[in-house]
Length: 272
Image 1 (cartoon, rainbow, N blue to C red):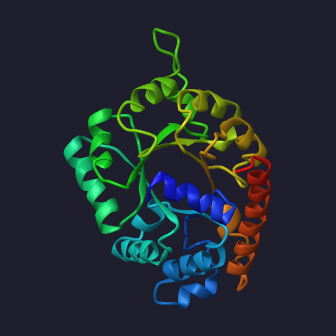
Image 2: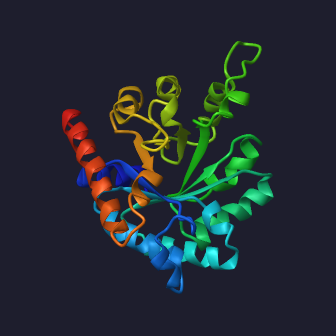
């Protein structure tokens, strides 16, 4: 999916919502456990209920890998089921030496046919470049995360008194363009989103943390908006686990619709 196509979907659906598909066998409704593929049945119902209100889905690969071969089957079926007009994110956080990254890229871009993948930039340019060789595919680099441990490294200052996350941004912007690189920017560090936006004015940001992690939609907009919207705001647990009963999909749809309504008003206010 190209940037133009993604923006068109945002305008059509009046939404920039990303729904995280993080199915946990301990949390999904118990009655689904009787089905042949509980993970896929859960995802299928969530997708059916939310597809009109979001422009992206983000399966977190860890929730599938931990189940072994059956988890990968569920993951493949999930990617295949997602409508083609919806942007897909393989939240895999890969990043290794070039030859290894090449095979990761083949897995997620060819086998799963994901539109994008989250990548760690820690090992530098040669670990990221193999992902950028695919046309119409995206790398979503970890830039500034919202977890507590992000303070361990991301804010360390170099000899020029610049934080590490800013150095990563400045260097990685030279590896690709705003047509194939996005950045992960945590919602709970909303005041820092503005700093990232200064360095990457044209790139899309994937912003996790809305809802259950405490991220504020208004703060994200105030600090991260650009003239192309430039935001995919993710909500996972707040949507998919709105209920653990038979009405789980219906409740998920209602939450997604509520967020979409708020986003639609914002888009109207921005004349977008």
